[in-house]
Image (cartoon, rainbow, N blue to C red; front, side, top):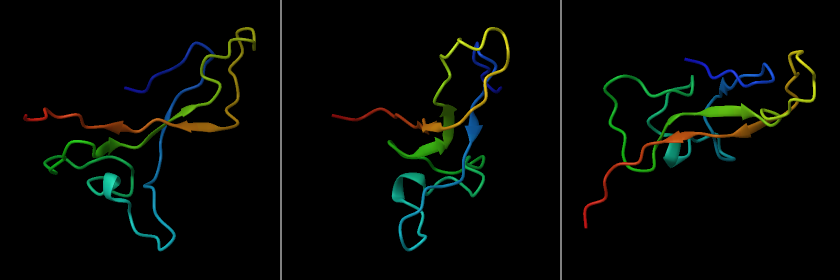
Length: 86
């Protein structure tokens, strides 16, 4: 389900984060190019399983009922938080 914010904007799924050599960063390794982990992939504590971006103006209700336009995105990846054994 895609979250729709009160001003009519919604989030998007982004591509993977890569370093200068175009290698996928360790945190994003379980994700595929679409930014989402495939079913059955092993995900460890701290791994990103959905590379989500939220609109920077998600809480801006100044447009008066019209749908706001998104000019920039905030990175809001969803990371797995497993239990840590002590």
